Amino acid sequence: MRKVLLVIPYQKEVKDIKQTGSKWPRIGVAYIAGYLRNKGVDVRVIDCRAEGLGPAELKRKIKKYAPDIVGLGPFTEEILDAVEICTITKKINSKIITVLGGPHASAIPRRTLEEFNDIDLVVFGEGEDTILEIAKGIKLKEILGLAYRKSGKIIINKKRPLQKDLGKFPYPAWDMFPLEKYRGILTLQLREETKGKELELPILSSRGCPFQCNFCYKIYGPSLRDRHPKLVVDEIEYDMKKYGATQFFFVEGTFGAVNSHGAEICDEIISRDLHNKIKWVSETRVDASKELLSKMKEAGCVEVGFGVESGDPKILAKSGKGITIKQVKKTISAAKKIGLRVECYFIMGHPNDTMETINRTLKFANELDPDIFNIGIMIPYPGTGIRALAEANLGNYHLLCDDWSEYTKQRGGPLEMQNISIDKLRKIQARAYIKFYRKPHRIFKILRTLPFKKLFKIGIDLARKSLEKEN
Image 1 (cartoon, rainbow, N blue to C red):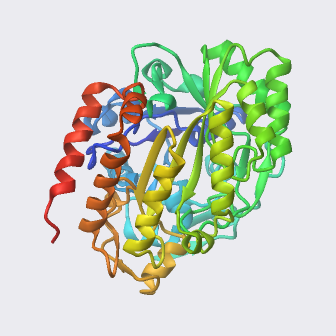
Image 2 (cartoon, helix red, strand yellow; image 1 turned 180 degrees about the vertical axis):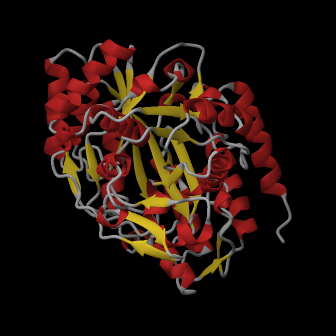
């Protein structure tokens, strides 16, 4: 069995001060590490971001461990740093097999191999069994969900069927991570470090998503597979006892997409009296019922995030989100009355957005009055409907670049509207944040969320951008 080293890339540059919380425990890597270990593989994790490691320190660690396989699962904006790590690995020992997985590589496995010579294999889709078979030395042509080179040609194997029984997977291997580095970094503080030493861990209640948002890539396909509520809460208890976790973040983005499943998880938390011992945060949809939101509050949920995306009914209807303005108003109002802290996410640059539709979105955000307002600039992530439109010069889009490091929602960069430049979008974004947060009651809320020093830097940056001349 081959030795496997899983690496979370370092972050060499933060291009926008609003990109808060770049350091968080990577649950996908933790799941794969736990699964491999459970199957007898010698596996380790190096978390460069948490440990503050640069290329030189990472090189020394790779040499010391001497792995047969180095695997990474970067997001699009991290891909160049991940490739640099593959290059470092090849210079140490050209025989080490470099493997890339994650959403970017899953969306475009062929292009990933064409673009980066130091990547040997691309895992697309659910990665646990694919990585295991690579570690076992099974012939590449027999491994589902794998792309590789052979005789100068790129071979794309058949997709691997999704694992229906999520109970098959052991808990994420958080003991392989430097968890002390994560203490005090909380979602409630936008993943900014606090003075306390609370440990927040991510958790999944399901995998996949049945919805068809045109701006989202789906590594697990258009399906939803729920974990049994008992297993979810068993994991919460395990993380509390083994690691001392007291806060949790349901990271799937669709908690309670099936309302009855979310309610069962809440009931399980309450029945074990964990609701008095933990706090938790989730993202869900605006079609969550008032009853589910009340149950979440009772079970210890303190914050819920909603993807509203647009305040224009026609733009929203065409996004594939499957929600309405009426639902948004009703659910946000209910969540606030119940006592949940509410965060709302919006996007500028939907297909055929105009100044009129964007202004309608900003007005709607102010009317909703969430505790946290977040507005990003549309990113044409590989494999998404937005990407397809941009490449076809449809949707009133102009694709500016494929510098993957620019693919960050708070900065924008790779995409603009034919009628609205990227400079204009950034100016609108900066002014929207200033207008929203300048009101006294909102200033007080954000001061409780972000460190003053960070908030001051963000404020200066927003002011500068709001006044910049457009090219």
